[in-house]
Image (cartoon, rainbow, N blue to C red; front, side, top):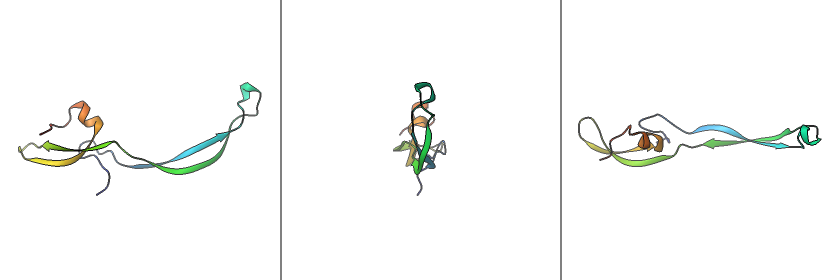
Length: 76
């Protein structure tokens, strides 16, 4: 199972961690330069909660905290 919200569809995405070095131009330098870009992943904040579906059945699903706060799911 991948890390994905059952309601909003949020899932793990990839990106980069960018490292910049140098002195800013307004401080007398020649500007900031990108020296490296390391790959990384951005993971959603998922919680495993018991949810009551439209039929009234109760099951455990992974739900993002944004969906929980907005009231998109009805907790059992």
